Image (spheres, rainbow, N blue to C red):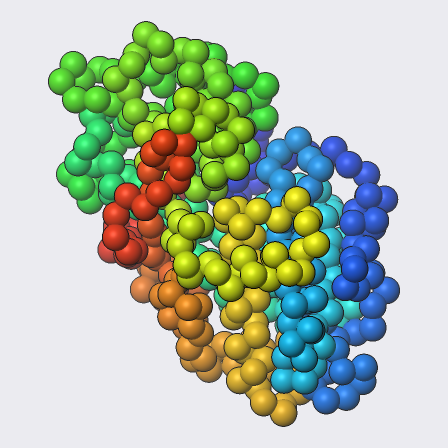
Length: 435
């Protein structure tokens, strides 16, 4: 087991470990440049006055040694080009500012402060592990955070957060529920951090629902360059039942691929062990680059928030990418971050349309959502409606309004649906025992 870095626990603890940035703050300023808008853009709290623009921001990390989501701000820019080519929203052009938080708490705070300085009306479709750094400035300025990736606990507690998916909690609970009937011993390989400590309880909530015992909890270094020892330990723990095949679940974010490289070599002596994971750890691009049908993911079960990328319900997003992304290879329609950004902007558009001729500000946007506005996402999620206290408030997720997950499986190197429709894990999560 690796040594543990101790972080102070706060009400806004995250589900993934904070990691050290590897790029300079100067790069963060350069990352703000956009074909749609630069860092010095005119403020966008307009509703028929000023320059006629509605200004929002999208941020995500890129060019780091940990999780990177460059497709999210890149897609937000493409979305703005598309919506503006259609005449904007209620006659207002959309201006998108972007920011790179570099997976660093200081840089995340800078992104949030710039959002305040630029008077954006919302932060839309973003990813950051540092809710302690970015939520306070947003809350102080009354700026709603719409459609965050769901990577932090605070996204499901902040009154100004409007998540469109169930984040890591639903993925792990749903995976445990699905695997309970088919797996023997289950082993979770997760970051050796305080944030990682939350993950076993979420997975166990699903396993217990299916009448399965708790997972074997294997800690590993999140930013390791190889995982031979953790892979070996996971395989040993998953083969203690001579009758039923065991399952190994890596939950190491972008390092899941590194783990699987080590796992593929180590599993030669354990051919019966299966793998399963969440969509935040692997997507179609990762499967392709790892060998497709001959790679380590073949046969793996994967839980996601949305339908598979080949589903026709994504056609609208794909048309935007095709016509307005200009071949930007950062934007992958199969990436869950890009998909979340599309849904987040779908929500934002319907909110602005609901305001009619009223002024568009952070306050009016959040008020519309708080007043019970129902948002349709074309079947990519259930109809979304945010309340002050959701059904999962009792277990610490008062803003979690979409607890639906999908089950997918890798067959012939492709992610395909393993079941019909969505599975609601609200009841499963309500029994979760979290630290």
